[in-house]
Image 1 (cartoon, one colour):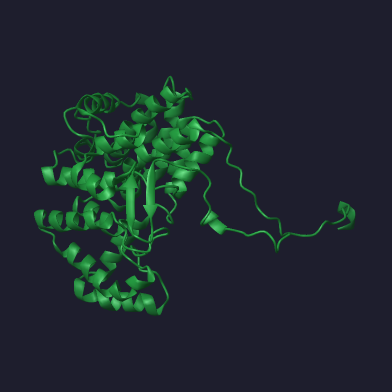
Image 2 (spheres, one colour; image 1 turned 30 degrees about the vertical axis):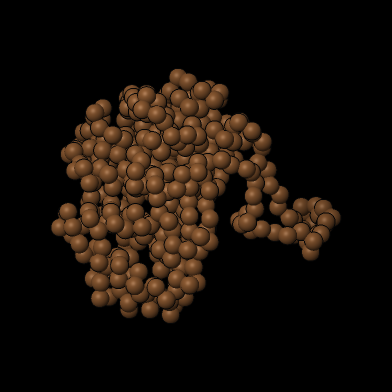
Amino acid sequence: MTDTVKINRGLKGVYFERSQISDIDGRAGSLTYRGYSIHDLATQATFEEVCYLLIHGDLPDATQLAEFDAALKAARVLPEPVFDIIRATAHGHPMDVLRTAVSALAALEPDSHDASEAGFLRNGIRLTAQVPMIIAAHEAIRNGRTPVLPDMSLSHAANWLWMLKGARPSADAERLADVDFILHAEHGSNASSFAARVTVGTEATLHGAMVTALSTLAGPAHGGAAEDVMKMVHEIGKPENAAAYVAAKRAAKEPVTGFGHRVYRAEDPRARHMREGVRKLGEEMGAPGWYAILQAVVEAMSPYARHGLNVNVDFYSGVIYQLHEIPMDLYVPIFAIGRMPGWLAQCLEQRRSNILIRPLTLYDGAAPRDWVPLAAR
């Protein structure tokens, strides 16, 4: 039987379900959310509009957007025991603190175990608002500061920067954070979204699925690329060192962080929007050198583009966070802020036509053996 069964390790190339949420064409380098090009969304939409689109299936009209925005802002509240948990885990990694706090919310929120569609929606909107609050509160507490209260007059992206830094962001900084969240909002059956669907497949709660997704995102093979890119940039130091760095990596047959993607053979369509954002923010903050290093790496890697080693979205994200003086261990939690509506959409879709996700493994271990008593072993 071993010779007749085809093994798709990592489920590569396997379609496990139909989906109406996002479409990725890796060869052409295109991405759509609910049929809308990522380029249109990144240049014209707000994160709140994209949240509504992913969750409800269509872009909102003005009334629907106002109601959704109001619900999202009203959910910017954390139970006091969550702050106690953050204080108790203050010296932990931010992803561990975030996962622990979300898990605690399952026990603290009165309707967290409501597994109806309405319950999923209420809990999903609440968690979308609460996740950035948890991250910002932890960053304040671990540095001996009082957490900044949310500002109900600010957008989701602007309020995140306000809670994190205690200062209102510029319009350009707010927009770049907004675009960052839009670009990370949804990406098909990636590891964390698939893990969340597996959890929902067991008829578990949304909080349980989000804890699963966060645990999966924390793995460096999934969510850690932006942090690794920033480490690479620091190692290179200045643009003129980029060519030698790339040559050494290629000679050692080691990957260059930020190039290549599991599903894209062409350039990641999200990358262009982050590239321009890095350039503009670097100039605004008087630190254009980071962008210059990135572009020098891109130039050094250009001969390998024909082999599918093109720049991906995380190549530019880390520098944006660096320019905001955000600690590197917050890069993956920021990814989670943007991905919340995508996870919610995936969980809702799984719930609507639910089936237990139970793939097979092909046994190739020992042949049947006779039992040997303990005394005879």
